[in-house]
Amino acid sequence: MAGRPSAGVFSDDGRPVFFLSIFFCGEVCVFFGICIFESMETVSPAYDPYCHVTVDDCRWIDLPVFPDPNGNLAVYDNGCRNAAFHAERVFFLYDVPSGASRGGHSEHTTIQLLVAVGGSFEVTVDDGINRVTHRLDNPCRGLLIPPGIWRELDRFTSGAVCLVLASTHFDEQDYVRDYDRFLALSAKKKVKKL
Image (cartoon, rainbow, N blue to C red; front, top):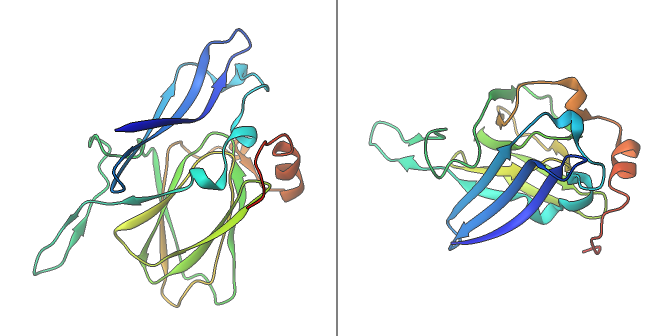
């Protein structure tokens, strides 16, 4: 299993506050580890996800499936060692009108896993330099979006349902809803345009 540090946040005295790592086991298993050591209030501006996380850090997560003749079961289990993160909040989007968009924000600390549990839709992820669009149409596969990534959801089919698992409870202060502000936060990113 190989690991790759993706992002970290440190307090003013250099202690780790928040650290993200992605581990790959072949191309099937992905583990996204999180350690939160203290309050995010003491975060040093020298290291934040807006400067270090890219669209390449958005990953597909395959959910374990238990097939059954009476209907299949896909599972996301916080207690499972292959869980991408501990989900603190679960919500879903449904009855999205034709032509409507959702999302239009990034988050400072929250990791999200988006799953099309019904129908399909597109998710465009943006790191301030590069934009990549993913089609979600499989209830057994989700798109992991780390902090510091702008996301827009659109092209919902009729009856589409987007299930979202989030690593934190809702906090409006965690959101960046203005794209110009997001670009300003991402301005120091050292990434080449794809």
